[in-house]
Image (cartoon, rainbow, N blue to C red; front, side, top):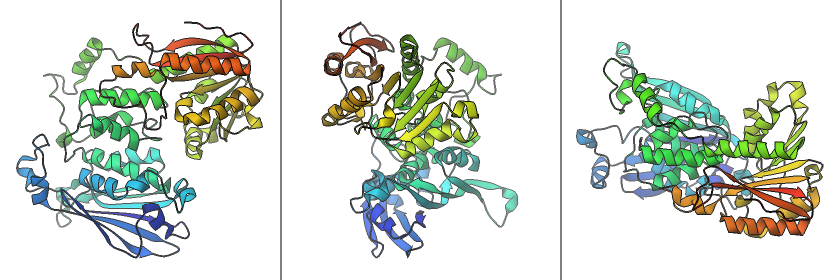
Length: 495
């Protein structure tokens, strides 16, 4: 099977630096299921193409199956795995381009952090759900998608199309993001994996989906397919995505998935209910869906802003615009600013908020700009309230004093609202290992959070109160903890 990645960024041969693979060499990598080769069919200043060719050995593939791995039955000997892009290609891509997927490039780090023109080509991709599903998955990520169905036999057009598509993606995308899009979505489109899916797959999905999956309109479908419809793992993944995402997550188990009948592995619907709607309705009534934590958190922040009477608000670390959108809906908020260090996140925010089509009166209330929370910026000053919603835990602890000086010392808004995970609550997430997000540098217990907040308040002349966010477990506290700082001298604590 073949994957090619091309760029017209000049000099185009910088692609070799980004992929950590020299254009003048053919490099070979051995896997349990076959051999991967990386080579460059073209390498010039104006255009460069890297090819990943995976030669799957069917016998090695069968022999490498563990006792708990999926069984292809007769298909384990005669199948399309050697020819069509699948989880095998995704696994090879993950191993061969490991450093590029992480966005690291010592020789061209600035380029690794930028979106560049890319073209990705896959000549044979299993697409259970049709070519339109490829559009549904890739277009929200900024790709121009060309998905052409491959006929069963060109000599017999009356036989119709196969379930394979010839896929071409074009767009200006960061290379690391492009590789992670492929790593997640190749097996999702194929709707199959060559290995047993265990609880560590949730961590893999969260890491590979960082910065794009939580905000994807089809994240529930992607998550279910990636985790091979294992309900417990899907629930865990969606709960974690909801904490870092932009919207309510979709229903965990919608009654019908948009795909071809041959791809369906769901239980048969009740007799006389061909769509399965009655079954889904009864299940929903028996098991109501809890309100996602990210919505509870946003509502808690909005309620706190209302309580303190803030009319001008700056969202420090706004991400892709979750809170900013809610603030815009409140006409009592007359001035709103959204700040993020990531230009990619601000691009997503502008797209999500439909900035280019926003009515002028609303647009005049909003300012989105790039900035670092550890460097003094006069644009941060002059607001009634500043919000740090799930931000502080993404900083290395030695950088926290710089953030404190910038926000509490230099900008000095009348109020500062801070939310952060409660590490004690993590034991309630059954499959969670480590912290809730791969980019978290720490997660505080309730005592640690209060110690930090009270010290900051005393140092910069604020008083501070605390509120739980989410289910307030009598033993472990709430999943999210909130501190509300108000300019003053007394340190006031509230339960």
